[in-house]
Length: 283
Ligand SMILES: [Zn+2]
Image (tube, rainbow, N blue to C red):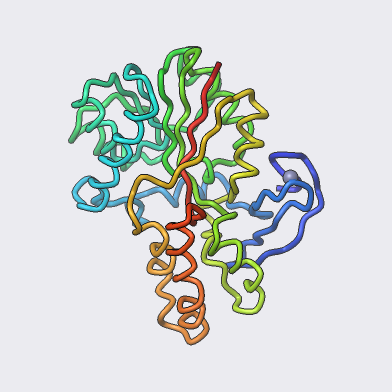
């Protein structure tokens, strides 16, 4: 990416080089993005079961609890009707929502995950990425993006298209990492020193949004009543990044964890967590 997806500015500052991926921050609007994202083919490979993507997700207690919490959150903020889950993976959320009376559809890039969604849950799901012709206009009451928007190559275009699929007064519900959360924000200043910024997670995450940048993205497309919440799944979120990285295996990583994991937990408690849930309405 040679310019910021959100504001078009070309000026950036380096946060960290992680596994050959350059994570930068736009000097104009603060959007964090990968300067050298993986190719389309590399991205597709990331989401195969062979590479460990969400394998057995349909059976894991953690994933089931997460899907139930997501549905509860959606029920609270949306009018029950047509639900689209973008990045639906194996379809746990859609399965719960269907049983709860929603008409459901899903889309995902992972062929393997969609096979489970179809075979185990009998769901109406589509393979691919969001395009203009993916669904009819003004079709859905709620569109849900669970940790999805940070993975797409062009969030600005994607949100614009998704808006067109929403009915008038429909609602967009999304969760995404929050680069403005307490731990990511503080640890970013020490990323060069430690050679780590756990928040970035390349190459899967092409972007990192803060409340400010996600608000810019959504209001730029005319979304209204943009409201922020804690992610609807307990304390587990803040510590997941640290655990996933096996940081305890290096001395620097150990100190990094001791310093910043508590900030992750405090951040979660004071509503400055390392991830966020956002609800936005289409007028
Ligand atoms: Zn920018």
